[in-house]
Image (tube, rainbow, N blue to C red; front, side):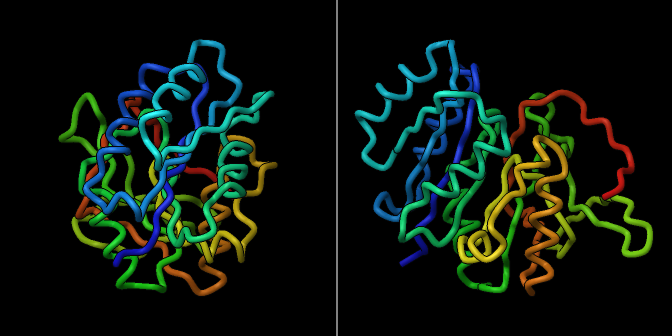
Length: 226
């Protein structure tokens, strides 16, 4: 029996994209009684909440939450952590513009289950409009300079941090670190969390054996400092 997995999605005023990708999340080939999907509507005004309420009526493993005020991405993710089920062993952050393949949970869940030292694991992420191209890669932080760098990897690779658009996290590690530091607002928060996990002895692993599609424009890469 695999670990219980919680898929966590937050969204603001993107009802159409959310519905498409939420249906893919609900269609996972993982056992129905071993995963849940929790979706947070961040005070949308475009009918998102009505759509979610209707969808939840037909899916017992879908939970929906509505914020009265907009919390922004990091605030939502942290609040989603606080709403994890007691039995959850792995939490998977998924942006509302990320499309999961049907075997995502079975593949990623099996690998993390077999390797309990992994604190965070991210898939191969490609551009939705050009799936032959990588959108995100495993990332590193220079120990002396603090500069970020990334490099492509064909195989499973240990690294320093991974993009949070689709990131599987061990719930035990979330609780030990306290999760995200909400003062980052919308940048570097996943770097901070991954580095905290590493200092506690967890591995951060790039797992390109499963691929997700991210519906974003061209990513402008530049060196940044912590």
